[in-house]
Length: 110
Image 1: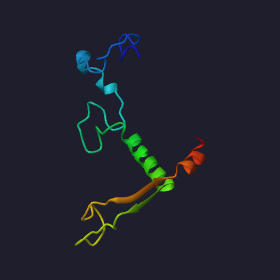
Image 2: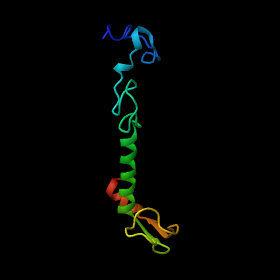
Image 3: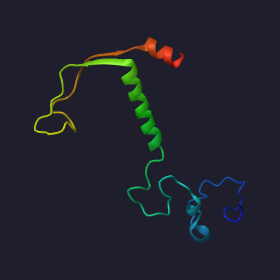
Image 4: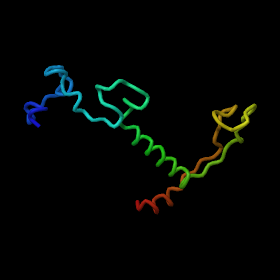
């Protein structure tokens, strides 16, 4: 749109940051969690890759639960807590960790 973006075919790296023409084009930027002209709040101005990062953590956890086996050196202990939340009293250590690569290769077609 030539009325909103003068010279739309030319590259201008500061196109959205320029304060010329009554405030620049910041109002045209679209973000999933708020635009640059909005006041920052808890639900705005968050990392745009947050959803991708959460998906990757879930995918890695799924691989660990499906294709890995492990054994703890000793069971974790929570003292003086009615519910087992937060960190246990002592560091949780692994005594054994195995990755079943043959099963993973078969499932993923590698």
